[in-house]
Image (cartoon, rainbow, N blue to C red; front, side, top):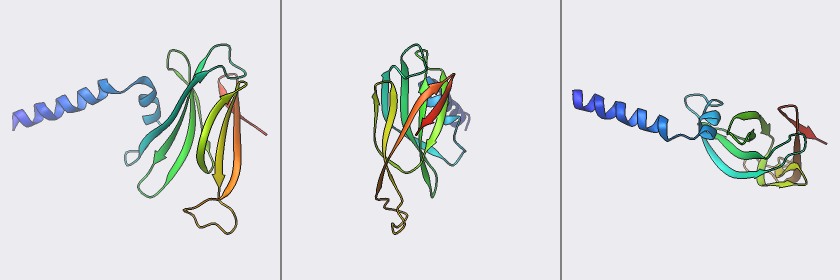
Length: 134
């Protein structure tokens, strides 16, 4: 029995050391029953910040729900901010200093599973905060 406890402890400790700073920051946004999936990681200049940032688009996966997020991290992988993104993210780009996400949103006649209205979410940085652009 003691050997089983040692193996279990080793598995927990090794998982903690295997996580990157980005994964650790994302996990701080989750509840116990939630998981995450990193979809896209970009690096580059974002308007409003002096140095390159790492932009991560990820999905929170709950037992019966999901939601998309964008997080920005400094070169040292310190989280600046995280914002929820409505809809289903088709792709994300960093162009001309703007974080631009193409999304599908639920239309008036769409079932929950299948959004069909094409939209765009755009962000830049003000201070250390992600701010949505019109």
